[in-house]
Length: 450
Image 1 (spheres, rainbow, N blue to C red):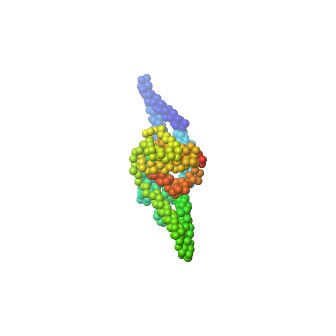
Image 2: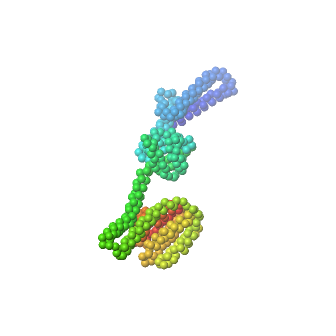
Image 3: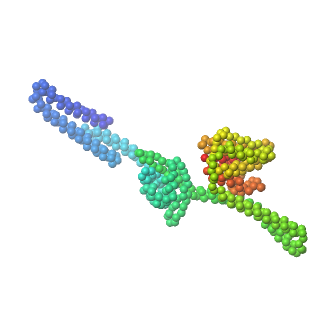
């Protein structure tokens, strides 16, 4: 509203000046040239007034622009002590300053709130300019995590921890990965961090926001639980073999003492031979057990080839058909898309499917109408899914949690290694294997490949 008044006052002065400049022509045409003596002072007064008005307005405007340039919105233009013609202009400047001040205060409040939130979270957070590498923001959690008091640029991280710097720079926005961080305070130590990144643009500049979450404790706890389960199973399996051997050895020792006192008979020799043979067999069983455990780490490389799923299923069906017929088990193959293909190691994937099919056959052997379904399809996330389902006895939740642990088996003759190897092979293909089961209804193993 103040600027409107200023504009009107400026327009009035311009119009009056134009009228005044038109008077000489009118006077000369009518022969009143003597009147120009009175016109000249009037023109000079208007001209001086116009110049002073514009100059004062320009000075006020320069002061206002200077306050905006230096973000000095606290500056106040006195409206009461100004000339009447400048009061409306100063009022307009004060209104703009108040608006800017309010916006700045609101932004400052938001920034302070963001800073408080950043300091409360335990996750380390950092943002930097992707062009210059300048670190814009870095919270206390990250400083404590990396033992870094300050980082001016992201390149500083390259000097302190080159490996972590490489991982951060290579991390694409929208992705996450686990990396190793090295911190040096009083002694050098390393730990695992989960890196997540996103990017945003502001005023033409592109920034990258990276979060650092220490997952060392979580990984250690998970690893500890896995080892505990593994040791429990191994201890159980070893004790099952060692306890009978120890008992039998003690019995044979007593028989030897008795035979030494009373004399060795052919029956005693036969019993001793049978006992020693039993100990030998059980010892060989323990050796095979240890060899099987060692085999878990042998499969490390893949011979990849493009294979059509229909060919995998056809080969598996030909191989297992005699056994399926003998046991009266029906095998259904469901493959809606005949052109589904995978980039896999055919030999290893065949072994996975055979193991899963054998397990399914074992699960349905006592069912009145045993049936196994082998299917494959492309999921909504573009991953290829292979599913082996049966209508067998199913598994409890407790068993489902342990079936992929090495040496865990629900069968007396099982060594508990088949599903562990299956999982390792699938993971080598960067895939996943899951089990879904309901006791009394059946089980399904689901394999996903990217």
